[in-house]
Length: 185
Image (cartoon, one colour):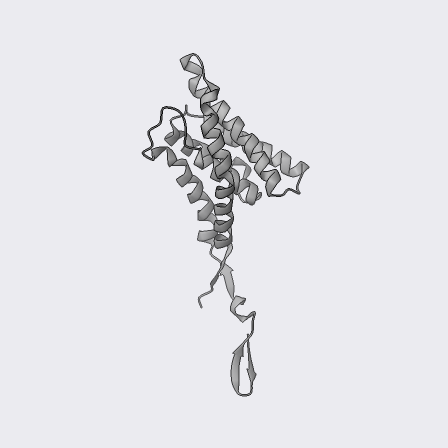
């Protein structure tokens, strides 16, 4: 909006927001791309005798679900879990099951307790990360006669400490995703 004062055109403080809309491509692709890129983290050249890298795909998936509860559909755990299974080395179907159960559990929690803050989300993520790592280790080591769960401790601690950073990145990407772009004529 413009107004004319003393022969000079002056733009209103809200004029730059008119006729702007979100980019649908950016709004839908950013969460998908970040989760898929996080699932590619096992391809990083890290050599360790015990699991050390956190499940970044799952952390991004969990963060997007906790930051924006209605963004991902309830069935989103199936395709994202399948993609993660293909690159993580886990038996096919383990991430599909765990990511889908995470979505269902978070849906129940959101229906029961719709008011949460970051500390509660962090505590929820600690629980889900612990369950994810233990069940993944049990599924992967089931055929090998046993699993030593104490080997998961460094990966668990690193994942829990990394979650606030991932949530901050997701929040920043969410702001960028919803930023309005100027509409072209």
